[in-house]
Image 1: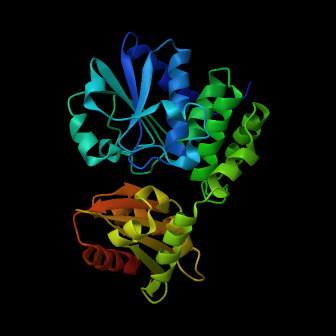
Image 2: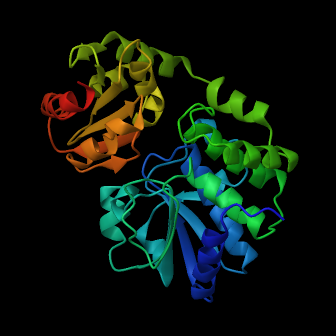
Length: 328
């Protein structure tokens, strides 16, 4: 039988053996996306395959577009009181700080038993690091491990895994979308995943308020670095006046990147005490993960983000200066 991730399969098995008798919290990153939520659902199923008790938690709520996934309703908002005698399994997190600043502080001192991830900037911070930096999505890794372990993949689990892969590959359009991705997704469809359900819930179920927020973002787009960078921004008032939240900006940065002849798209979001920045690059050689790292963030070679104490204008200027030599 074909094996997708034999080494990571064995690493996950070792993780499960080390967690015997331990309650596990499967935790994802702040502002969870499709790969994060799908990975949490899948990781919990894999832990159950080994007879382990677990629960799922995040700093932020699951976006409405992902609530169609069976099991997403079981993901709780993190509360330290739920952590008695608990070990941590991080999914889709390049480092322990990705769970959010307050949650990261609250988790200090707890056993970091596992880390399943695909980010190029992953720091290997857990006891067992189930990491493939070349994979398109954490759900790609977990799907491969599930097939390698011959876990029974129900339609609900297949849907969660397919959704995570679809979203993190940009609907199968990003550079990391390999033949293995299509092979895995074909098998997931055979197990009951519905591409139609994923597309309808993720891309054809948009609120009018979110479109009004997008309109505001598009209205701020402007060039930098001789037209090689396109930057847009959202102020706090934009969210208040449109009745939206920070969860509604998923995918906005791709509009900036899609402008003709632009090498890097940038989205800046003003928060109460910080500024969030998202970067998308047309090619991996630009290494926007390294740019993000200069401002306390990280991610992938073509997709990265950061949260900075700088003002929006300060972060804008800093990013432009860091990106200029990379896109010249």
